[in-house]
Length: 275
Image 1 (cartoon, rainbow, N blue to C red):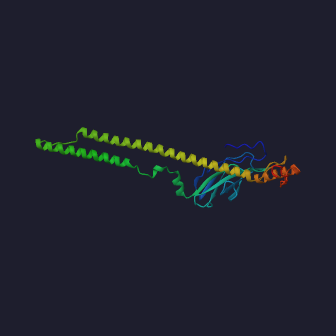
Image 2 (image 1 turned 120 degrees about the vertical axis):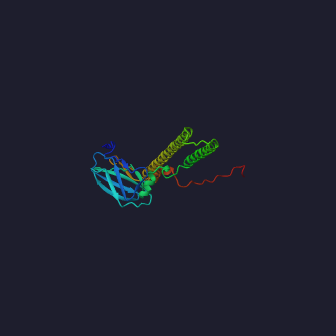
Image 3 (image 1 turned 180 degrees about the horizontal axis):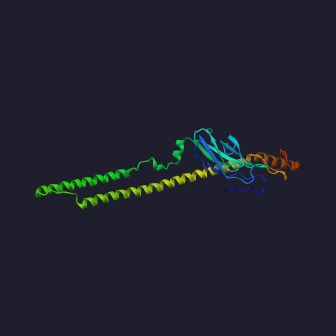
């Protein structure tokens, strides 16, 4: 099994990579199985599930042994088609990983799962194809009946009884059937291609939207959160608004009297032209 490498810049482990469920896939909320790739040197894992990508509202959290890469949670998530975000943290002697790899899923009913994996044309009729075949069959039958009527009338006139079906009629029926089958195959092939393209496009759009939400969540977390970047060097990350206030205060203190909250008013003596 493939192992994720640890980070080289810090002693904290890299976050495990989620395997399933991913990209807002609809799953059966009665029993959700989370899978992830192992990280070498891990002493324990922690599964976290939240309503938001920043994990401010954690609804489920459980520690997992280091030799486990999957966890099934039964009868916990409501089947209300809500989107959840989940991640796996890895722990070693230096603490927990950052948890920067986030995936999502939608908790639904078994019917929702079946509807999600079913292609659109499985529940649809074949539209005009069926009517086309029926019309072709009716046309052939009417034509044969008309020809048979004329032939029987002529046979009665000359006193000859006709038996059997001519080969021309059999060939016409076979050609009509083959033509109708060919039309059905072509239409079904084109419809399948269009459906598959639509499904792929929808999946790609969903994947891009999920990636965008994860990127926004990570950016907001960095701009509004606290984090120790280098404890030995005394480097920390603080919210951007506090950082701007600190910079403004330091600039004011370093400037001394060069900065004044008020501008002095100097009255100018009128010139001779103004008098």
